[in-house]
Image (cartoon, rainbow, N blue to C red; front, side, top):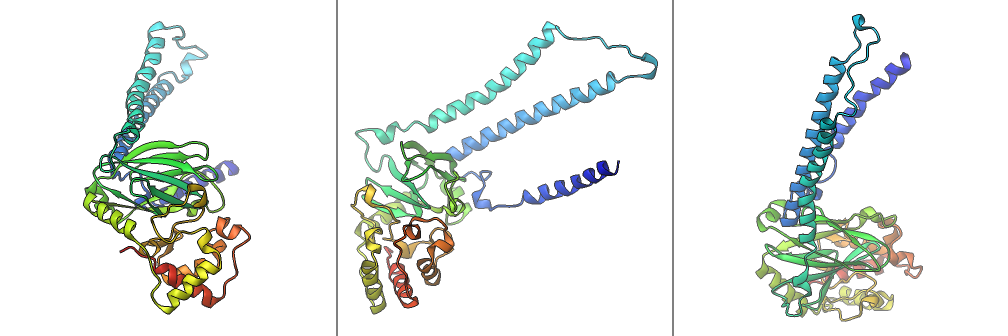
Length: 359
């Protein structure tokens, strides 16, 4: 009896913990605040499935309580067995047809939405123009993201810029292990595989994106290694005119070191071998296989260092000195060739990369 009471005492505690855990997480990572057409469809399907589940549970609960009360053993009835309904064709047809109907109600919108999301004929058309269908090649790496705009011949990393109120087509793949591309407010997860490309589209609603703040957030949704939880990226959704202005600045960007410290940092960047992996201008013409580190062409305009630290020269310096501390298992320090840097060298390199701006 005491053991039974002890176990039941834990129930209120567990319920209290569950209640507080519902408040965990960040609002910008919630699928319950959709900011586009795809997210709307997924949200509506989620609500529909929840309603169906609640109705089924409620009906089953009512029947369960009714049966317990009506057919409970009574003192004056002894061991009498209630009338059995086994083999009742009407009942059997009823509880077979109802689940089929519920599945159809749920399956039809799910299948329709899935096929609609997979409709990428416009991005694959031979007559496609950049203004007709924006295509972004997404490449997932341990533990960073590359975004290539093939029609504009520009590449950026860690921050995705897209126009609002139009379909944006994505071609997703991985450079190493399996990852998963996910922007919670815009749409569901799409696998990033090394062996094939996955194609789909998203749309970003200008009004709701504005309500969400300057940026939406994206994450890797597939366990890919020790720094999986730190594989974040930002999404900046802007009007088409602003997007066109951004692409022009990115194409024309040719960063030049100005001050003495920047020139010292640029020299170290080449001397220490950083230039072998990192490009320093967005118009990177190297083949995909050679792009094995984030493009730094607009590093000074970003809002995060390595996708996780506040964007400042101090944090950039910390990252350069010890990237393994902030992202365990990353390719940069995991290669065994990462050079040891003095405080002065790290400061000069941080100053240089912070000067790489396009606006």
